[in-house]
Length: 151
Image (cartoon, helix red, strand yellow):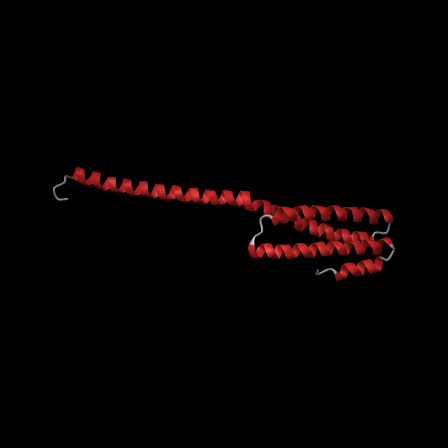
């Protein structure tokens, strides 16, 4: 190193710096590539499930409101409309659950299947609700809804 001129020493130092910058650039580029792959995976694989869950949550709320509307409707046409709306929402929820089910694995998949069984049982209970409303037993129908509040 003592035999080198100042110019050669400067070239050596700047060469080392450029080498370090090149290594950092390659490392940064690789990490950005990994981050981009992760973001694309989230967008393509998981976003569909998130959107389906959001739709299901909204539909469940409206479904519950339709139950109350059917039980408390003063006219037959109101009851029929609420019952049809409730059936349509139930079918939409089944479709949303079908979309979600494919992305569930392991313990989450098992929990989802249990929730799905409870949902099927809940929908079967709504057939009883329709019978009560159809026979003019609105108070019993509202009591049935209140009992299923935490189901």
